[in-house]
Image 1 (cartoon, rainbow, N blue to C red):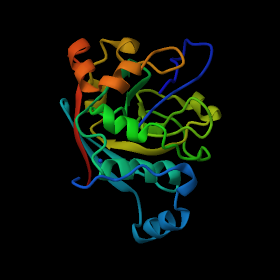
Image 2: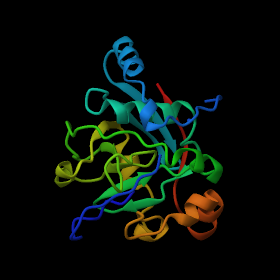
Image 3: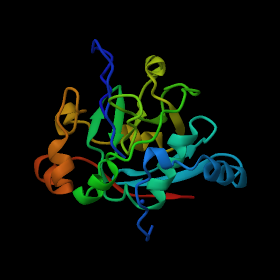
Amino acid sequence: MRIDPPAAHFLAATLILVGCERVEPVPSSDVGADAMALRAATEAGPVEVAVATSQGEFVIAVHREWAPLGAERFLTLVESGYYDDARFHRVVPDFIVQWGLAGDPALTAEWMNAYIPDDPVVASNTRGRIAFAFTDPGTRATQVYISLVDNSRLDSTGFAPFGEVVSGMDVVDALYSGYGENSGGGLRRGDQSRIVTEGNTYLDREYPLLDRLIGASRR
C-alpha cells in the first residue's frame, strides 16, 4: 500500500493482502454478491477478528455494511490463513500501520493481482479504522492499514474502511516503527519488490526488528 503521510503533496497507496484449507484467489469478475448477501444475512452484527502479534493481541470488528466487498475479502484471507506469520512491514508514526504481503512469496503471488471492485466510502478513516488501499481504482487485493490518527482526509480519495479496532489499540500503537518507510513503503514512491519475491526471508534479514503477525482468526 502507498498512502502518503500528511506532509506529502499527493495521496497514493498500495496494499497487497488465511485455518487449514487453502482458499483460492477470487478474480474480481467472480465476486459472489449473492453469496456475500446470504452470508451477511446469517451473521447479524459485526464479525470480530483477533489478531495475535509479537506485541500482544488486538481485535478488529468487521462491519460488512461499511464496505461489503472489502469486508468479505478480509474475512476470506483471515479464514484461509493468508496473514499468518506476516510482518507489519510499514509502520509510520502518527499515520498508519500496514501489512498484507504474505511471509511465503508463493502465496503473495497467488493473491496480489486478485483484485476486488471498489466499495463506496461509508465510514471515515478515523483512528483505529482499517481499510484496503490501492494504486488505481479497482486494485484492492490483500494489503490493509490501520489508522493511528484521524486520517479522515483519505475519505475523499476512495479508501473505504471495513472495520475498526475495538480492543488492543495500545498493541497497534506499540508495533515497531523505527524503520518507517524504508522497510516497505508503497509502490508509487517506495519499493516492495523484494518483499514480494523473497517474503519473510528478506524482511527478517534486513529488518529484524519488525513485529510479527502471529495469526488472525475469527472469534
